[in-house]
Length: 122
Image 1 (cartoon, rainbow, N blue to C red):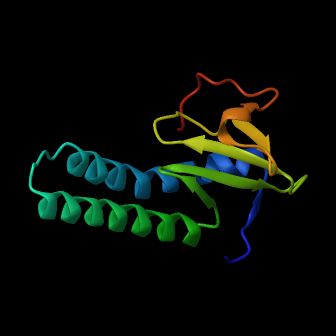
Image 2 (spheres, helix red, strand yellow; image 1 turned 90 degrees about the vertical axis):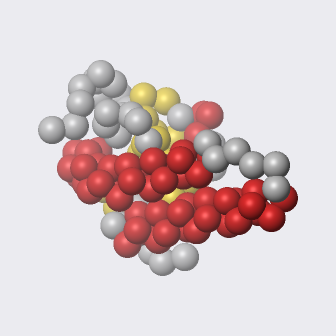
Image 3 (cartoon, one colour; image 1 turned 45 degrees about the horizontal axis):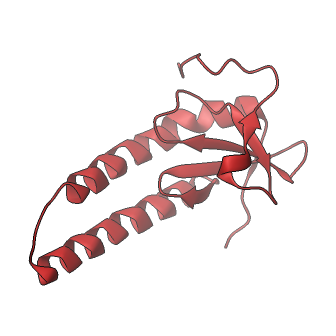
């Protein structure tokens, strides 16, 4: 995997509109495919392959922005101040406002000190 850029929390939030620009259509395509119901095993396999393709294309797009895909429509921004700290964002959140250590998981993330979780991206 290529080296990722390092960000301050302000820089991460500055890049977030671009992350959302590539994530929003991918998440909507994935959800549309997820809602497709079929009892045909071949059709279900084709849907799963298309979902995998959407997720892989999205991952390549966010990697190109310098961030790390860490799950389906979840990204980490490596902290400039301490590369073992990752600023974490999940699709649907209004801003990058959580962090965790590189040895921790999404479930262990905590709010970034001093950041308002309710503010929206401009």
